[in-house]
Image (cartoon, rainbow, N blue to C red; front, side, top):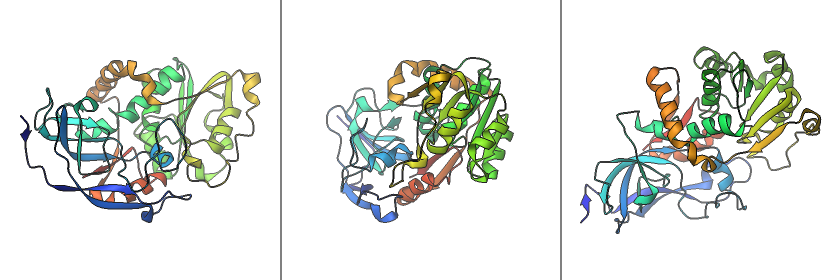
Amino acid sequence: MAAEQDVPATGREWHLAARPQGWPVPADFALVEAPVRRPGPGEITVRNAYLSVDPYMRGRMNDVKSYVAPYALGGPMDGGAVGYVVASEAEGFAVGDAVLHGLGWREYATLGAAHAVKVDPELAPLSAYLGVLGMPGMTAYAGLLEVASFKEGDTVFVSGAAGAVGSLVGQIARLKGAKRVVGSAGSAAKVATLVEQYGFDAAFDYKAGPVAEQLAEAAPEGIDVYFDNVGGEHLEAAIGALNVHGRVTLCGAIAQYNDTSAPAGPRNLALAIGKRLRLQGMIVGDHAALREQFFAEVGGWLRSGELRFDETVVEGVENTAEAFIGLLRGANTGKMVVKV
């Protein structure tokens, strides 16, 4: 028998109204009142407390084949969310349990309990399970340690370094014994945050001058690892700066997500031959085997205060689309979340 709190007949959810041409605009999204389905056998209904907006969602708005299906026009979008169970027909899940799941962009979600994970709001703020203890944190951890084969003494360069993933990559590299950690970000304030709060050895504002010149100044002995969240000019500059046997984690290319023409580069990829570089793309779902290690190590750093994280919180489910558009324009420091 289902245990229930108040489950409304309807709730608000965001639909993709049009496929964005270049930069998304508010008219590409529609906030719709939709029925809230009660749970069937093995299902739960969740009242979402926080929703995640992430750069990868921009790619899902295009009708192209990728590692994850595109959003359907006129249908609800989805993404990471955390909230509280308000009705349960699933063994092991009780009303009031806090859970992480994948049906965001809405107020209420009904889903199979097999697709939800219980989380502990006493261990960390609930929203942290969308950031430092969630997909971005796991991306940073696996992308640096497993994909880039980081080793003590490496010099590491991170682009998009003030974002949810990049800010953690730099700190994990420092905690693991990097020789030097360099980051790029899009404002003087973010650059200051990287050095003063996150412990980067050097950082620069990519809008203040050519990336290659600023990187050469920040890492005069070259770099061993590049964690790429941006692509384009940053990737080209990193290829130029990488030392022999350097490694690149290709995590994101936010600089070109909204381009309507072909990207300009990198034009110097031939350097990868002589330098014997390794450039590897990553999808976080491939690294589930690291999850327990990730929780143990990152959780320890959080408890000790050695690892810091920031959140940019946008209030109100009705502002989710604006939060996403703001994310693409760099309006966040750390993880961007929507408080429902």
